[in-house]
Structures are given as C-alpha cells and as structure tokens.
Image (cartoon, rainbow, N blue to C red; front, side, top):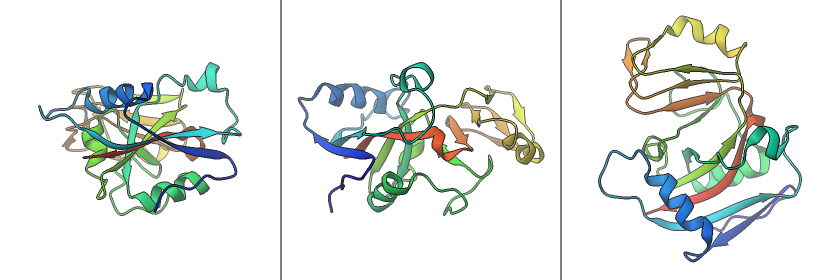
Amino acid sequence: MSFQNGNLYKVEKLNISHPYWKEVEEALNRNKKSSIPYVIEELYSVSWHKKPFPWSWTKQFKPNRRFFFHGTTKQSIQNILDNGFQTGYTKHGKMLGNGVYISYHSNKSRNYAPEDYLLSTMIYAPNTLVVNPNEKLDLTLIDSLSKRVDAIEVRTNAIVGTWTMKNHEICVYDVKRVVPRFIIKVL
C-alpha cells in the first residue's frame, strides 16, 4: 500500500538527495537518548492544496517548527490525512486528556509506531500550558485545564500525578491545530 493523494493534499515520495531528507533525519535524532541514530527508510512530503485549518501558515503556524512526532500505523496515517486526527479512540492512555499526542522526541513517538511510521506535524497551540522539569501537574486539574488551553506540554522530568515523565509530550485538544507535514518510515 502506498499513500494516496486526497482532495486537500498531495503526498510525494522523496529520495535521499532531496534537501528535506537531511533536515528530517537531523530532527529525528535530536535529543535521542540512544547513540544509534535513526535512519530514514522512506520519506514523504505532505503538501496541502487548501489549508485544513483557519490560521495563517506563516504568521501563526510557523512552518519551520514542524518537527513534532506522532507514531502510528501506515493505515492510520492515511486515515489522518483523509479525515484529520480523531480523538476519543485510543489504544493507549490519556494521561493529559482527550487530544492528539505528539512529542518533540522521536523516540517517544516511535514507541507507538508498530510499523516504524512517524508523522512529523506542525502545531498551532499558542495557549499552551508548559510543565517544566521538576514542576508538578495534578491529574485532577487536567479536565478543567483542557477546556481553557490549546494544549498541555510536559517536558522531560516534569511530574504528572505521581509519574515523572521520561520524555517530552504534548497533548493538543483541537485536532485542527495538528497538521501532518512529513511521513517517515525509519529503519
């Protein structure tokens, strides 16, 4: 199965000589705890014919900040491209509430990628609650916070409930604020 183009987007398979290849590979390996680097097996660019959100690409989204990662299956990536991210359904926990979970760290997202596929996403969440290392977030506050902020970002070593976060993670509550930019298959 290869990725199909849709009404709002085009998927283009890139080769190793494409300028984005090195940029994406560097983003995959930043802050990675293992000394063995991730190597890209396949890389696809997702171009949007029509914006799937009401915000400005350049003024609000800042396309250069596109390296937040979401691990999933190949079939789920095609569904995300066609229908957008969906919340409410998950095979995994919802510690930060009902939203789209992404990470600055590729190794965190790779834990949720059984077929080794990652989406590199752009996000627009200007009203984000950031929980820094050694700061605490009470789990009982998450439901009320998710109604007042665009996202909750917990950084490595932040404490959520009784859990110390091993990797950076963001939960974005409005699915239109998370837009796929690259599809990555890692070795």
